[in-house]
Image (cartoon, rainbow, N blue to C red; front, side, top):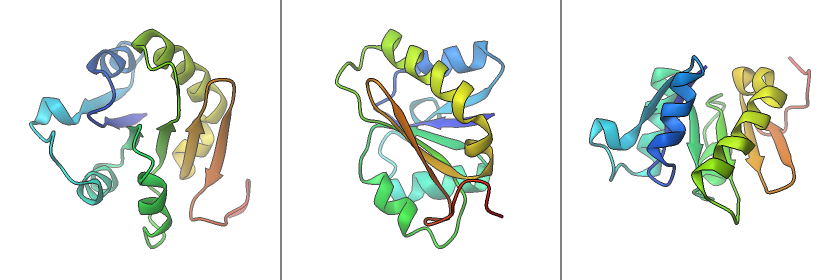
Length: 127
């Protein structure tokens, strides 16, 4: 899978993704650490990447995306240590790979994760 990590996500998470066979970029690596959310979304859409982010505003951006199917992994964790983030991400990727490839927002919490299919209102398995 292809990922784009926002500034709140540790570069070590991106390195972990790469070591596990994924194509991952971090905004910091590209000198884009001040890029507005709308432009991050547009970049991910253009490059066919899944956004990894902590920013809760992204749910609204996705809702207003006019049918774009750019997937987002949104972390809502109290424990933001990199090792915990990688552990949760590992579980989420195993459980939601098909949803992410088809277009979804995955909200990751401490003990669970929820999938919202894109475009908003789409049901699981609906075409």
